[in-house]
Length: 386
Image (cartoon, rainbow, N blue to C red; front, side, top):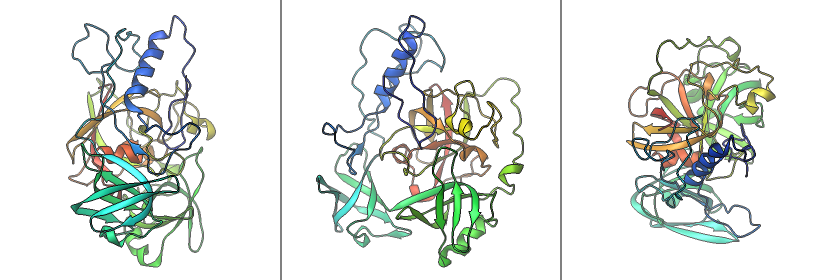
């Protein structure tokens, strides 16, 4: 069995061999992967095309016969076997958006064409289609060669209503500052990122991130050029503490709530293929192991975090609801979220969320749930195992 697809190049685990003790575990994992990861097929031996369509898959039942409500997965860690009947072929929910990526070949007020020497795709633009390239703009302002992420209208394969050009994001701890750039660590298993803040954006950034010194957190969105992010928009408010002084989270007492509210963010696709679907979760079970913590030599259960959350294993089902768009979807936990767990910010996309980040989504997953990339977050409610 192949490795679980990884969000952000972080935690990953390999399914164990098929034995009598774990057959049901393997079956449920395969079913979950089949339900969620539905990449567009490519030619044998061919790399993923820049214009590959991220096709969200429907929620399926992971319960065996006679187990209550249909369509509700068994909680993580359950040994309940799945039914012998083959699941139906997953189909993308009609209410979810889809994302296509590629380089602009041609664009007009009515259509946009993306692709490369291996092929071209053309999409009709809605009358109110919007674009973003460091700031809001009209689609015809984009230029050939721009790397774009296009959001398709639900239930269509050829109509687009949002375009983001050369968008990038860096979230993490500042480790070095030069006269004109910052070096940011997003996690122990990811490459450090260079952020340059142009003079015209300095005031806007420092209103929310006054401490651009090593040891403090930063989260900015901007234009990515040749591996460097030109930071233009602050994606959050900077916590007042340095990472080394993060306050210990309050411990749980009593029964855990069925749902938890906070904010959901997205991370850049620098270290992962465009179109990967999944969510990095801030509280991966220490017993499962997190590649981030292992690389940083952090003992199990000792990773710094602002907010206490229930532990989940890689592959656990996590139902995420975008409270601003009213869209819900179940995604698997595909990795850790070492930077997200350090923030105590609120999302104010539609109203004020409770403090703390609950989920760090891949770009395709964030768009599928109705998120606007330039806003950086949406108010979210998560339900574990639903």
